[in-house]
Image (cartoon, rainbow, N blue to C red; front, top):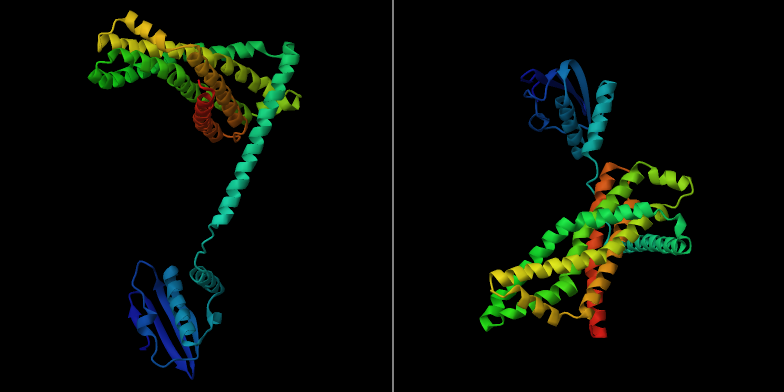
Length: 375
């Protein structure tokens, strides 16, 4: 290696003494400027010891550390000794950190194994089921206490919740139910018209709305509207520590906050279902009169002939269960929410998803039970 070789402002010089090689660095070492490369300048005769030194170095940055690291890596590969004792203490420390970061072991796959994931999911599901069961038990006990002593119940809160989840929901229930009945009638008319069975549109729409679509659509609407509202309200109260204040005063949050909402939605759900049934039949009647030219009187008589009390009763039983599930899901998610603004949003979303899931599962169970009972 020729002494005094220059590359821009950064330069190096070497001197050998026996089996020891001394490398002197001088000049300005900037990462944006060219610098010497040890891969091109390394000696042909392999020394047993390499000593780097700093002499007349002006400005420097990581470019200097990279060059020193190249020397250290080369000496390690050649089995020589790299002696940084002659370097300033600051550069030695930075070089040590640089080498440690560069020589760090590769990332290890820390993802959980399949059995671990299954076990964790099982425990999480068990804990959630235990919490939900405890909440349902508290609600049942609160309802039993209400039956024994109704005077302590806040009926004004319950009536207010009935107005919010009942009367205030009539516009959206009317729109959705009417459109559902209209769509079902139109789709049935396209097929039945081919066989001259236009009048049976009333049978199809009437049975479908009363037994299935009326309770289902009303429940889904209230799950997105009222269930989310319950969860958001209770989650916001939890974030503001209002629920903690109630419990500190010895007031049960389930009896004070959950029970009025539970009773209100359970009572109003069958009424909204009856209303949704009537509006859905009107939607089918509109298609019958406008598309199939069926007189409204004939359509209504045909509807009455196909629907009996068991059909209406099955829909009302479903609506009772749906209302109970929506109220429980919304209140449970609200009480479990995190104490933050983000937790309020997540609680509302979780309440809607949980409610709809329980509605679908409950509807499937009702279908099996009603088939067994011959309804």
